[in-house]
Length: 351
Image (tube, rainbow, N blue to C red; front, side, top):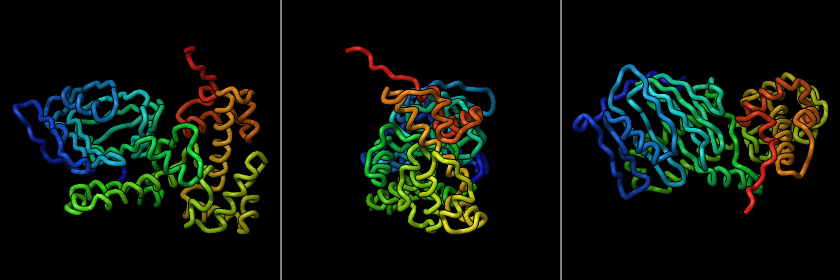
C-alpha cells in the first residue's frame, strides 16, 4: 500500500492478563517473531528501546488497542513492524550508527527529521539526525534499519573510497518517482518473504533482498555523497543523461544553464528535461543543485576540521548560490542541519 498512513485494518492483538507478552524470539536471526504484544505501553517501550535506541515517549488520549512489535528479519539489516496501539509522540533524538526508513502501512501520523516535518509518506533518517514522530493509535509502520557500516560499504563499493562521514540521505522518499515506488514495493515484498518457507530454507535469497535494498537506496535517494557516485553507477541511464551529469560535475563552479547541459548531452533542452524526469526522477536543474550542495558540504567540512577557512556565505557564493536564505533551506533539506552547524569547528577534548 502506498500514499501515507492508512488504508489497512489491523487484526486484533493477543492479550495476556490485560498486560503484555514479550516474545523471546528464536535461535535463527532471520526468522520473524513477535517481540511484544499486549496493552502495557511502558513494557512495549522498553522492548522498542532495546531494539533501536533511547527515546522519549508521550502517550496521548484516545482510542486504545493492544500494541504489537514484530521483528521480521535481522542479519545484514533489520526489518520490523510496529504498532503502538495508542496515540504516541516519540522523540528519538539523534540516531546512533544506523539509518531508519519508515514505511507506513496503516493509520495516520507525521514524521519529523532534523526538526522538519517530512511531507512525503515515507521517510529516512540516519546517524546524527533527529527523528520525531506523532502517530495515531491505528498507525502501523514497517521499519527498515540499515547499519551505518552497511550503507558506507555500498558507497565504498561504487566510489572506491569509504565516506569520510556517515552518509546523510534526504529525508523524504518521493514515492511518486517510479524508481522509489519500486524500491518501496521491494521492501514490502521482503516483509512478506521473511515469513515464507523459502526464507527459512534459503538465507542466501534473503541476502539478495538485502543487497537490492541497500544498493537501491544508495543509488536512488539523494544524499551528501550522491555526486561522488560515478556515472557508471547508473548504467541503465541513457548516455545523454550521463553526459549531462558529468558536465554538471566538471563545471559546478561555473554559470551553467539547462541549455549548456543539453548541448553537452547532445540533445535538446526539452529532451533532456524529459529524460531526467523519466530516467532519473528529477530535473537537470535539481541535479545541478545537488552537485553544488555536495561541493558546499565538502568545503564546510574542511572549514570545520581546520583544513580550510572562510564563511558560509563565501562558500555558497563560490558554488553559485547567491540567494542565501534559499540556499540555507536547500542545504537543510539535504543534510538535516543549517550550513553554519556543519562549518562549526570540532575540538577533541584534551586527553
